[in-house]
Amino acid sequence: MNYPVRDGVVTVNDMRLHYIEAGPSEGAPLIFLHGIGGGIEDWWANLGYFGEQGYRVLAPSMPGHGSSDFPSGGWDAMDSGRTVVGLMDAWHVRQAPLIGHSAGGIPAMLATLEAPDRVSGLVLVAPSGLGRRIGWMLRVLTIPVIGEALWQPWLLQGKRAEKAIFADQELVNHEILERWVTRHRDPAQRRNFFRLLRQGLTIFGLKSRLDLRPRLHEIACPTLIIWGRDDQIVPQPDWSDSRLQEWRGMRLLELAPCGHWPQVEQSAAFDHETALFLRGLTTDGAPEVGSGRRESPGQDRPD
Image (cartoon, one colour):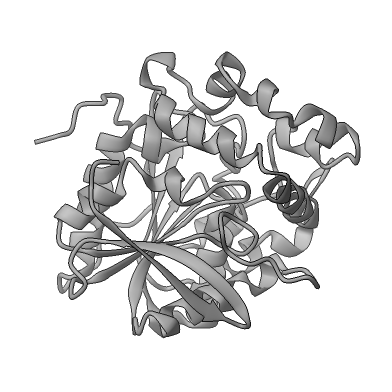
């Protein structure tokens, strides 16, 4: 990413957590949360754009990722909402929108449920937690020994990873993908990945305690969900589910062609639509809500 960022470390619940910051330090805060096995680099295609928009962009490495601590006694994903609120306290952020990708959608939603006055809006990108369906690739990795045998860096390289994550091979961001593979060459990162993955998933899918559908009606802030039409890792839920229908402040945007990384594969459309949504949070009226679908098939940044 050709954009200046500042590194920092804060302590939250006795964990030293690394983060990067972009944009003006006095700007309106905007927080990006990656998923399991992800990292700050998952947002590399987007942080500069929002920094240029004048936001104070904050992107932490969650516990067990990057150079952030992973407590010796473990860390429960159900505590992740409190971890996000603790990060906001450490950054002296009273309120901010949260943007969470994949498993990063769970801490974003939990923070909103546990401290609704701290979250002004949600952008959930191919989020976990809206159902128990997970692609077979991740479910197989929960099987001890077999998962470790399959999740080898040399197997993640090249076309295998590209086809698993991206829908259109012409839109692959090779730099970000290589950084993702490099993380999984580190033995500590691999151990943490499997610990966190198996804490949340089984061979049958997401564990029921992380299925947040029963509580979605409690989320009152405006919410934009961005999903790739071709996502095979976290497939879209059944939108006819009454628990999803009761989520009054939610709007779905479907991007195509697009797999599990909308913010990377369709970065221009993602940035544009997210920026529009965020600007709506500052107006008197809330952004348009509802469950209607829209497609944004192009990669060129809209005017």
